[in-house]
Length: 203
Length: 390
Image (tube, rainbow over all chains, first blue to last red; front, top):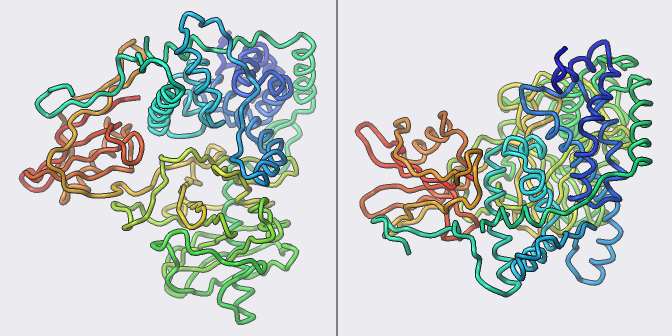
């Protein structure tokens, strides 16, 4: 029996909707972890179940020709989390506006410190990540921590793959800039963009 | 160490959900499965059998229809513009998109103040316009929902709807600070941005999402850097044949008179979700340069093969009459169709070569993509491309 995600989804869309339980068994923990990294464990506890209820309701919309199942589930999770953030954030932002401050939405996720060998650089990056906007953090989680490829990220966020590329490029540049602003040694990335003249001379 | 490797090392350790949490989630799913809950209408316990994408399309179009009908109702009272409340009107978001003339859309039914409608409404703007996009059957509370467009400043929000000479409907909601404009059908893609116009496509961190609200209404959510607000919120149903230019609807968001984002949605995806498409200006500015940049910023990350996916290669794009058209032809021809499709800066060198580049950030000296277009016999063609590939 074909036991692939696509086959399970086909069965769930047909005469055996109970097969969708297999989707839960396979992907629940990954969806929970994604939500936890992006928005915090409390959000994950609240929403991971809703993701699968929503996915079951929308199972006919999954098209295996357009991508894999997990990014599709991440996309549903992203939309649900954004909706929750909208609701939860309105009151706090209203107060912040009254105080004349820019709204800040920092997910309640603390970065682990098992990268201590990175030292000050890690501290700078942690500081930079904490200051990312929510949509930037979504992107960071998907590409750096969930390690989706560009197509998967595009599927999860509902944006063209070219947009994924440009946003990741901007995100890297922004992280470098913010990390540099935090002080410390210069960016050690050897692939830092460099300019080369038409004659091939590296500046 | 590469930045991506550094980031991976900082991956939060979040553990696993508790057994009680997993069990609760599983129970919720089992309940849904037992009830045969589905949005598609094809599963057990379905409603009317109408695919959700029809609802999606109808929802977006019903909004503009509602705007048009409101305008129509107002014109019967002698108003030029529909004003949904008494707030001040901000300056137009885009001068280039300001409707030129107002033509009356024939409509068979008018929504009353509470947004109630009779079953059939036909939106077919005429009077010189040729962008009729078919019938729609909206139901429910639409017009009051417009007032929710700017929840932070609802008392200041105002709205109006007009038609341009082609029959295109422009519905605007605006407050003192923020304006949102829905334009349907969306205008044709521009080759060049209007002078002084700040195209936000692909440059901002704004986002737009779409979905069913808990009340069963259809929402388009535009999320801005200073907050977020509901752009559209309607309850509707109906099937539409969305084809040609009618497949695109465009939203423009402005803050304090400055255009900060533009979103164009393809309503005819057929898969249940309007797709965000990039129809922004291909070229945002043109400048003469002594020397054009030659190499795009290398990508710091690795591709599937473990190597940075940087590209730097000669190419041969289709020949076109102008440099910008050659760029567009190159970008829309496989395999180059994956390169960025708008937001290029045109740099003209003393020898006449046109180099088109997308900066990492506006005004940046590092480039994500650079396409060189040179004159050939019979026109212009892309001859070289360099890109970060990430």
